[in-house]
Length: 391
Image 1 (cartoon, rainbow, N blue to C red):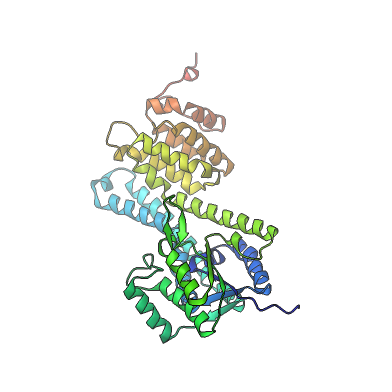
Image 2 (cartoon, rainbow, N blue to C red; image 1 turned 45 degrees about the horizontal axis):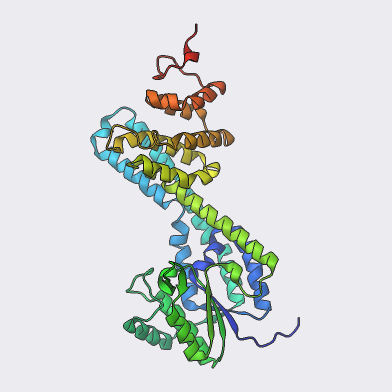
């Protein structure tokens, strides 16, 4: 291996930049080799002990629970409402509670499986691989004293995201400053990567994020150094065009999966409680690009929530089914249902719960349901199409 020249170029990744390594196998397979190549090229990754602690803390808590927590909480709230109010005496309530319990159990099993993965020995190997290419900056009383002084003075980085009673980002920053001071490093170049805009950045007049100038000036005054910032790993130094494209692709995929998971966890509740057609149309515009990836549970929840909106609506109209963009949404949902073999009987039951105008509006779905073997009793229907008359 050729001898590396003595560079003074360093990379600091905030804890949030490591998130993908532990929630996405493809992220690890793509990004870790790139990190290793950058390390071989002479760039030094700094890893304060605080970041190691936060990674381990997060993979046992927030990173391990983000997937189904919101949906479980929503289902438990609905169950509690049903059990404690007069609605418990209505027909089929016990069946509804049983269905909710089944769904909650399934979601908890999914979270448990994910939790076991993110806390497994495999995840430990990821941490060890990252540490092998990093300079570990240990804790010290010197750092603690500097952090306390920074907190007293109110100097950035701030710690709004972890609570003002804690000093997470201040500790990370002081660890880095302490490393450069103890090693008498002059004129270093530091690449900082973080998505925590609240604590590390300020907003410009154009509402863009900018690394806090206080930190830039501080780094320059202390070490005659240069500090730069990005929230995107494609901006890593010494990264090839091919690697840059790989990073962009995997980060985009991870972001899309996170957005999809978030949408699927909250969409039913958002529609159920929507209080205007305009609000519903806005929701529909947001979720339409993701419908072709919805799973069966999400479709089922949307169908139920759309009917239940009538109970939340302040006026005589359903603020979901009567919204201007509802027809296009439900056509997309119906087509997705056929792609993933969603039980069309559930669509049949949904159609029968619509009022006359809604059945007329969604007649094209009913027509396709009949072509696919779903029969409707004429006496059950509120809207009678000329084709229903047998003479």
